[in-house]
Length: 185
Image (tube, rainbow, N blue to C red):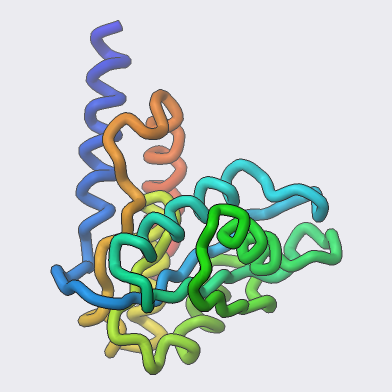
């Protein structure tokens, strides 16, 4: 029990820090980038995409009514429906009435960054709606494709202590592994 509590506490701390890394404390309207997660059923948005859509909506609401959401993702599962379309439907279902932009080609996080970076050229502020470590990975990749974006990243509402419960351990382990794989070689 003691080790489990310690591991969970460390995971919470790691993700709380990751949520703020490479961000600046700016306020105002923001473009919220929400990357898709492999969705095998074209008729139903999976749990990860539903959660990311919730993060996107609460982030957009935090920064103001002029904020917009950029839903990313092609169709890596081969279902015939791009993840961006599913994410867009989900943010609308959650009551978001602002602008939603779709990027329908990318199949990986690196492709998300490559495809989305040019779409963010006019964005004053950019937030990434995912789990904190994946969001950090996407900020790193976006910064490689467009170094000017590095000064425009703001924190999203992706971290809430205890929100994921024991799943936080899994997201932290997977997220750290994934982040390490993204480093330049």
